[in-house]
Image 1 (spheres, one colour):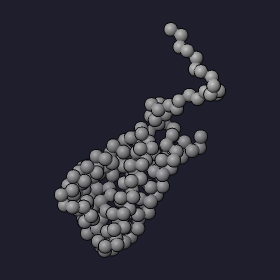
Image 2: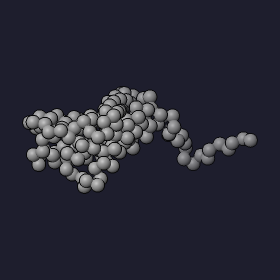
Image 3: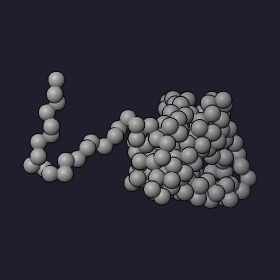
Image 4: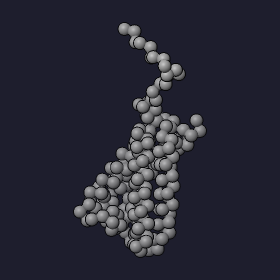
Length: 168
């Protein structure tokens, strides 16, 4: 029972992060493309597509987590994205780039002494990765559509016993 409350808290935090990041990026599509470009990890031909697709993906994941719909799948997607973001931020830091990550819109701008920002962003993303790992392990939570749509199958106490025939 306690684990379902922990899961609900994980879902709420992740949903809030994804929805706020997605809305802020969606409102500033040019800034999101600029932030994607600033990391210098993707071929230029992919930068606009990734920059425009990312906010939509974040909004979908956030909405699903808020509703508790496909929780495990959305937690896996969150984990994958967090690893990608961690690698991207660590790579920018290791290569000496001094940019804002654009995690919550904007970004791509030069940031003097970006090290403190990188450390904060990495710690935040590691924390979010841990929350997503909890939901992969324990996806069933309170106030979840998963509980309504995907009820567990009833088990028979005696495996030799046949289910009762439906009378018609």
